[in-house]
Image (cartoon, rainbow, N blue to C red; front, side, top):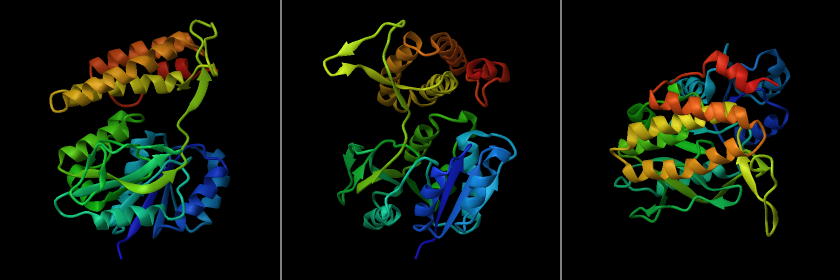
Length: 303
């Protein structure tokens, strides 16, 4: 039987996380929770997680999701993992999720060279496979990292997650890199995970209320702090991939323009979103990576 180890980054986890970890621990041989610099405030929750026979690794400072994932993946590989499951702290996996993903790996033939299996649906919304493999597996170009089941060979050949991105686009960049190494990403048909994708807020351009036939129009809201990374890292990825994947790069530009305009023109914190978008765009253009500058972080996150 393959050895399966799960890696879950946490940041200021609440008690709901304990229930998610309990369900996940029952599906894997070992659970590694990497706390990304939450500090003493997380002591109680992390102690409960340790009580589930999970390993808790506490980072001394916040390193971002890529750094936290890599800390756990390194330990998992050192412990002989054949497959590594990665999820976010707010993701709830169904009881047979890992088994279904492993069954998808077993169904793949060597020609497909399957490297990652992910969820078929997230909150009921389908992933919509782009291709079908010779044996009938649904293949996708990219997926969210939460719910990945990754074969050991992928980490050995494609490397770990890119810590220079810190947060946002970490999974997208990894999917591109994995595919460039010849691996494929498949969905585990019939699986559906619960995952928090962000807050939905009313669209109010310049403070005005806009309505459609069903009521207030809503969009997915991210904080100015996140907006900086979203803009910066997407531009960075376009630079990296435009020559090899021009259609993907064009699609990224198209799908990011709307949300960026929503954030800048609609509340809350429109001015901070404007600053985050402009500075993130400049940093992306000049390939400035790593953690957000301290002064900018203080401005974007102050109450």
